[in-house]
Length: 371
Image 1: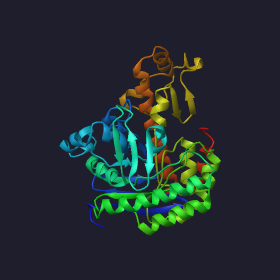
Image 2 (image 1 turned 45 degrees about the horizontal axis):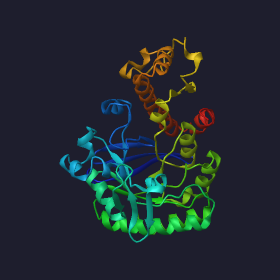
Image 3 (image 1 turned 180 degrees about the horizontal axis):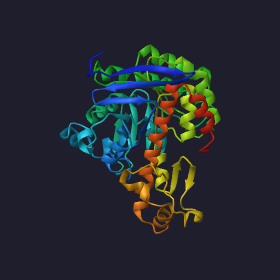
Image 4 (image 1 turned 135 degrees about the vertical axis):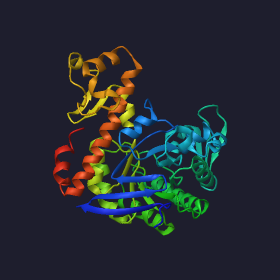
């Protein structure tokens, strides 16, 4: 495999939990990996340099939002998002499929065309076809590109789920053709099927027939219980190729991630660390802490005494409590940065325990720690 080509190496397994490494021209990604979400080219409230210092090796951007702002013309001037946002590591982009669900009142799905949006910014008509999604992601210069898919809202209706599989499989084939033979980048397929094993099998089978560089489980973390998510992963994960990365989209809490690693997932993304940071919720080795709580008003301890990034270990919980109650934006920035740092430390410990053969012990200790 050439140094400028995408590749994945499965290094070892501890039961189902996998230790691996993704290689891209922009750098390596140790898996299991967590990707902070920079939907519009920024991880909310955090300097790009600080994201790097947390140990983050890859971030996520979004096709739909970056198409609207800043737009392809500006991204082309910077040869993509890396230069534009000063991030010289790998980037994965969601295809816009999630916005088909989250902005469902503003779009209509046409199997033969794609998703027809009325922009949430100015109402302008936007056609996001499978081909357009790939073109935009190439303009973003993404290292890992996702196919455009239809992600249904939580439902047990097999007719709705089957229709989404049909549309998503058709679009995936068109995405593969548009993507072409660029070996410096990767194209991932996205499986649908809700909580039904037979529908997941159908979706995965169709994707494998097309052939992708990696495979994602879509249509989860949309309202089902954690146990339901783990059960469907357990029933279907072995259908995915062993020699390709496995990505669970939009997940989640540290416990969600730990449980999914236990089922064989390699990649994760979620807005939770920064969204929680903006509401005063911190993830720590003590568990989940609501720093707004009055009990932290006189707490002189830091969130993590070992984290000297931006001097985080010099700020007491008391001070952070004060900032939150004073509506100071620095509270959001500091807690969001801490949360990203914690998530990356958590992933590092997961990888270390898989390597050492002690993952089961780590899993049992922390699986219910953050619920």
